Length: 292
Image (tube, rainbow, N blue to C red; front, side, top):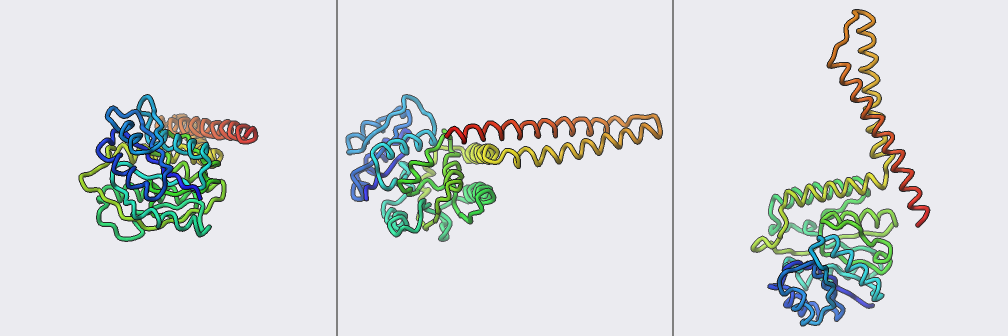
């Protein structure tokens, strides 16, 4: 089994060399995506024996994961493990994450921070991660505990079929949505993570909002008729109700109640826009999928 470990890295000169050297106890195939770092991340990773992909500028976490997927597919690895460069993940947890793939019990394994009580995770992070995970679960029907964990293992089939397109932090959700579409089996295993020194470089509020919006984007593209069509019908129904109410009042009193009329007209227009959007987007998505 050819195992590759992919590490997205941005200005990680303090950690990257040590991590790459430690990971060589697992595999010699280590892919570091240097996402436009302005420090020595690239040279130190290469010096340590990793294969380095260099982005000329900072493109985002998702772009790094995509580059790693493409390279893993290109070199024909059987398993890809994604691992953070900031020192939060433990090398000793890799066998735990890898085992379900070896046992043919999963196509994707997620190292979850919440299967065991992990007091290291700050409260504000728990709230955001669990909210995003619930949104992901509502779409996929899964019962995951940590949809945003970057510590994962993927089979060769997943690498080939689920190459991501999102350049931001929404990539974790995107891969799960694509895996759900392809009927890949996803399981979680417990890991221990350290937030000592607050190693994250992302603002938790902007991070959470960005992931939420990205998740909604992929859901809307996947099911445009439901995502836009159902609210469209709802607004159209409300709008027509208020318009009929306005007409009835006018017929009885020759007066137009402005507020009711405005609600009716605006709701009707919004409903029509949403319905047209759902139809057009559904048509576009259908054509794209048929061409694929």
